[in-house]
Length: 393
Ligand code: ZLM
Ligand code: CA
Ligand code: ZN
Image 1 (cartoon, rainbow, N blue to C red):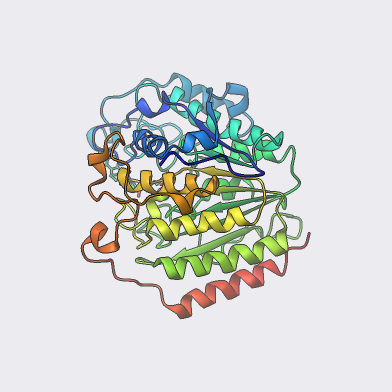
Image 2 (cartoon, protein in one colour):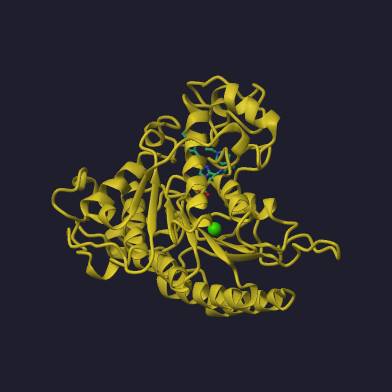
């Protein structure tokens, strides 16, 4: 396990803050910051830190968060008292400001610290990419793609991705944002609706009314006005339940390959939400670690400076498997990694099956029915190609 060496000719950095992982959203809330500890434990058990620059990240400052978020929102976020019970069940009448204090986005102890630490890691990652000290920067504590300028949404309070991409835009002409979380990356998409310097692409489960956040249909490509340079720079890949590794990888490689040719990004921001894996508590897909990670490997092979963010992921053992294996791809150690989880891994018993790559049957018992037809996937590719005809750089 410890024959892992630094990759030849490029640098990978890992940005984390163990303090962030100690926060709790509440008893049965699906978001568990502790999954980051589990991830780090696997990464370390495999000896991967030897192959990377490891940074203990600071909290982002108010001014840094203010590069995207409104002051009145930040002020309220910093001062709102923690509540011991989510409001919308027990106290339906109480006022909810900025969507804070409902059951999705509860006000918990240390909330502002948690948010500024998440953004601090992502911003440090962006700075390392900007000043060329890293070629790939990993920030698993980030990826909170739903947060809006003045509103919390879907477990996300501060949009660390937008803050990091704004930093990248100071040094790179064009940034490609890719989002493989099972949910639509609405907050990032909206933030860059009016610029042609950022293209956003989200793959997600799409079923308005039924599945959060309900946006991200095939035809949602950014406001189409003549004066909006950002028109056609939002790409959405709406999917149904049960998509498989094979279908997803093919779709991903076709779409991202084409976007890379047309948009020619100078940096990539990849949100690796792990709730698109099979067996996720909130997810609906049949992806295995291998299929999810194939997206990361494809991006890495484009040889463009890249930040890898975390995001969703609600079955912690599978989140840790995916993000640890994706870390090994970043450092080019994935081919020599033993699929059997090392004996000395802390919390090894949490992994149930002792492999990094459990089969679908091990994860689910019975795999989820696949509701994605080849015909529909072809239509999606066709539509994306049509959008890209408007894009010239
Ligand atoms: N109810 N507790 C993904 C963000 C998904 C909105 C329906 C809340 C939950 C969920 C919260 C303990 C990312 C919605 C859901 C019940 C209104 C969502 C607290 C279970 C619980 O047990 C729970 C009391 C909670 C929340 C389930 N919420 C499942 N799905 C979504 C938000 C975030 O992965 O994309 C990035 C990090 N919210 O569907 C409701 C409409 C609130
Ligand atoms: Ca997504
Ligand atoms: Zn998600």
